[in-house]
Each structure stands twice: as structure tokens, then as C-alpha cells.
Length: 433
Image (cartoon, rainbow, N blue to C red; front, top):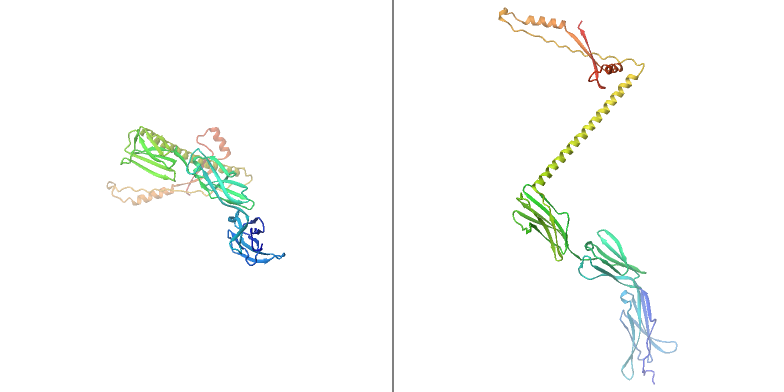
């Protein structure tokens, strides 16, 4: 048989049956096939065609001829696990074609990628029920460690390990976010966060309250639920609607909260029952509010006044006690200085201060009496003033604290009103010379 007549063409040869390379590195694959008829060499093709290949016809050491093809590309995680096929297409002299092939599987090493979290059951989760979070990631080699994190505001905590995380949800779970971290020996990657949609029936806050004035009653009520609740008011079992005398105002609190306030005017009469109701698709909750009677409100006002008055009196007492303490401290300081002066021996007595003199003269005139002869009283007044000046006395006053002997005498005589702060005065009369 002619060497160009092939019943079964030979199988191409690849450099290796399995290639393990790091992602991002350059990979070169070589495929060769025998060419029994050098004039009709086989045509080599690659599947998938990752890049352009380089083919050449060469003569081997044993004088045979072969065709080789080299495929060069950069490894990607997308190539991991792919089957690379090299096909040799032979054209026969008698006509027709024959094909043979060889293949290998790429093994690309890379850190975790496309990490994500799935929730089961999907969609809304009823408060109190169980939920399972699953972490998925592509990696080569496979992920070795999974770590779960819970995020609440700025706070982040580890809540579990392993590919799955199962727990019972609460109302607060609806405001918390979860994500997972996947890791192998080549690196790690975090998933995006997931937020659970926890549904629950309305819950009315216990802070609802009412107040009364002379002209109106004002009440407020706050509720949270998912789906977001609606609210209504009932007075003595009857639903309250907006009117001139009854005004309802509502304020949305985020996605799950609602605050409602009710103002009823001209309300001097007692209100038997006031009820706040909150409803969503899962149920209804209610809260009965206490409305103070006019007598209770008056008593509350009087109590507030009494408390204010007591506080004022207490403040005055504190100020009085502070003032007394300051005065007592001042007296102690004065007594101490006095005693130091008395205990000093051999010191000459202090010089007496010059007395302070005071005089007072009164000149009087008498009206002219026609019956006395109509004389002018001016000379008489001048004579009298001159006489008064000649008989005038001068007084000097000298002040000094009492001596030790005087203190003893006061104690024996039982003088009333004497104390540590008594000052004695001496009056000396002197006639003008």
C-alpha cells in the first residue's frame, strides 16, 4: 500500500494531557501529527480557537515528516475545566478526507470569584420563621473557608461559618444585612450584602398618651409593621373621622412606622373610651388610652404649682444658710484679730484719735409786738445768740471694744443684749474756754 493511502490516520500528539496553570499566566500548547504524504500534509485546527496558531512542516530524525501547531494564550478562570481539542484533517489521494484528534483539559488556579448569597425561602420571610442563607463562589482549588457577617448600621459581627447559615428571623432582622466571605489558598472575596424582607403584624408602641386642656384633648399613638400599617381612632366604639372638632394628623416613620395624633376640641365632658388601632395584611393591634378628667388635670396643675413653690422656698433657704455662714466666718475673723491685739505685751497703748466735735446753735427771733412799743427785735436776737455761744458745750465720742474685765462684769450683772460684737462708747463734755 502506498504510504499516502491511509486506512486509519494516526492520532495527533499533545504536549500533556492536563495543564495546571495560574490565572493570568501565558500558556503554550503544542500539537503534532504525522504527514505520510508530505505533498498532502494534514491540516491542524484547535477547538476552542483561543488565539491564532502557528503551523509548520518538519522532518523528524527518523526521516519521517510531521506537521506541528503551537497555540499560545493567557490563562483565565473562564478557561478552567475546558477541553482543548487538536484535530488533524487528512486529504487522501483517491479523494475524500479522514480526521483524527487528541484533547486535554485545562486546570487554571485562581482565587474565589463571583461570590454571592442566596436566600431560602426566597421573597418575604414571616417573623419567627426559619431562613437559610447559602454562599456560592467559584474558585480553583475550591473554597476552603466560608465566613458569615451581619451588619447593623456601622457595627459588623461574625455570626457563623460554613457554606450555609440558618436562623430564625425577628423584627430586627429586617434592618440587618448579611454577607459571606469565601477563601482559598490563592485569595478571598466578599459577596454583596443581602437584606431580609421580614414581615410582621403591627406593634403599637407603649408610649401612646393623652393630655387635656380647657379647650381640647390631644392624643398620640405610634405603630410599626411590615407591610406598613394604617391607623384609626375610636371613641366609645365609634370610628373617628376628620372634622372641624376632631383633627387627625399622620407622620410616616421610615418604611415600616406610622405616628398618628388626634385633637378633639370642645371636650369639657368626660370621654368614656379612646382606642388606637393599627392594621396591616397580617393582623390588627390596639391600645386603649387614658384621658385625664378635668378634675385630674386641675389637681395636676395645683400639684405642679406646689412643687414649684417648694422648690422656690428651698432655694431661698439655701441662700439664707450660705449668707449666715459667711457672716459667722467674718465674726470669727474679727474676734481673732481682737484677741491678738490684747495678748501683745509691752506694746504702748494706741494713741487716742482726735475727738470729733459737733456743735449746734439755734438763733431765734420774736415777732414784733405792737403792744410792746414796736421796737425792732434784731438787736435782741443778736444778744441772745451771743449768750448761747458763750454757754455752748462740746462733746467728743470715743468708741472701743469691751475689755476682758468688762466681759466678766457683764456676765455677773447679766446685762441684756450684750454679745461678742458690742462696741462701747464714751461721751466727754467740754466747755469752750
